Image 1 (cartoon, each protein chain N blue to C red):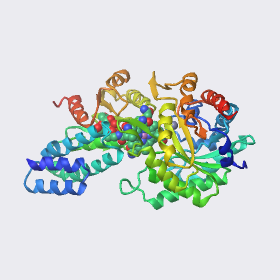
Image 2 (image 1 turned 180 degrees about the vertical axis):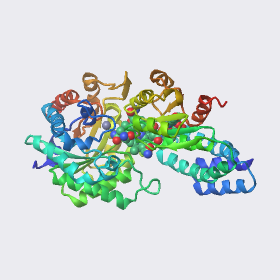
Image 3 (image 1 turned 180 degrees about the horizontal axis):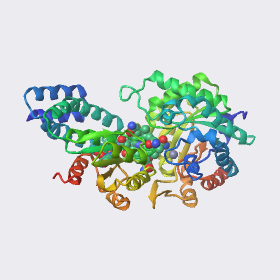
Image 4 (image 1 turned 120 degrees about the vertical axis):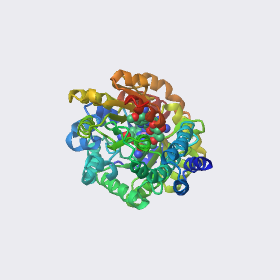
Length: 295
Length: 212
Ligand code: B1M
Ligand SMILES: [Zn+2]
């Protein structure tokens, strides 16, 4: 297993990968299908995506386990397969991970709201994340990456689960949009509040992902930086998805994405990468930009 | 008079206890249940929608307001059924395949129900086949599809195709909606109607069944 992940962040910027979901769709994953089930049924295609990101120069990849929690898998009748699918997800990435690179166990939101707004209790959410995170750790994840969170409470619980049940470093990133009030998650949470709460919960790395482009990511990190002593991470999308002749196309192609990316590096994030709509071609440009900083 | 405004106000701040109380009082005073919906609950939820669009409200406030709306609706709905009023029509509604966003769809469903439609809510992530089966089995006049993501919008087009393939396209009207959906898209895929919000959805449903 790769040692010294946090140690590395002290002296260099690491590059995480880009999208998994849109890459799998390009390989035949259809609308109604469960992406995590591909860890079992199409492992070679999942590994092909991981390999492509490592080949593009990424230092770390995220496992295909974003929706691998019991509450989401239940929608596909797969709630019994949580441990299997997450374990396999971590193994697949582990098998193709070159020396000196890292496997991040991806943990996304449950899609449910906490009581009293929604129907799940804090204890239940804790158990849901525990089941997933333990399987990721067992499968060989080097880092736990809690991402695309919108509710700080849900995110904080996931961070606690990872901290209390594993020895792995923990990343926690949230998704913000720029609206009339500034940067806000869909629950109305601003970056300062998020940064304070995630720091308090014990995350080692905090930041944002799945935001609309590098400028938004920059804005969010600028607000987080003064109120946290943790490492910062950003994974912006390739702009907004558009439906053109029945096909989803993202606004920013690799070249345009690369042109917009350098501003984000001005806040000196410790980890950068991409999210929805980004491809190994996008990430190859990011790798090049980061090489310029690291050298 | 004042009580309609009060109901709306309680709904807007998401106070479901107060909405229930006020609705009970209004009903005890003999207020027409339909009026409570049209003059209290609907104006209230419209303000909530507006506030969400203007970023005054976020998802938690919308959820609380929706719950307050249900609190009122739950009291009023059985009375409307009892009035013996015939249903305006039967609607099968759900979110497009792969789409789990159901807050807006549920508001639309609730509003249609409150204004006299019989609503069969299929939930979220509904396949074109399921829409088609349910529409046929339940003899629905309207199939309502909601999508909140550009990636799930094609499910709407596939549903229109599935209805055609099953030979029942001319027996149902297809109404679509959701934030990324437009009239243009409705035209493109051959849907019969598009509605921007829940109030427009009610008006459109009536229009589609020539009830206006
Ligand atoms: C049949 O006829 C009709 C007629 C009118 C109809 C109609 C049908 N349906 C709706 N209407 C109309 O009437 C309603 C009432 O006025 C209106 O309904 P609306 O639904 O528009 O309005 C509701 C009252 C309030 N609006 C909403 O409820 C949607 C709000 C936002 C914040 C949102 C929410 C809440 C959620 N989300 Co998601 N979410 C976003 C949304 C961003 C935003 N700010 O709008 C959006 C839609 N989400 C998005 C994404 C990407 C995702 N979400 C996801 C998950 C979620 C939650 C589960 C956390 C939650 C949904 C909870 C639930 N049970 O519904 C994921 C996908 C899950 C899935 N497979 O569906 C995920 C992929 C995130 C992720 N990476 O995991 C984006 C879609 C981007 C795109 N264009 O494709 C998004 C625009 C946010 C963003 N800016 O990126 C009208 O549109
Ligand atoms: Zn994303």
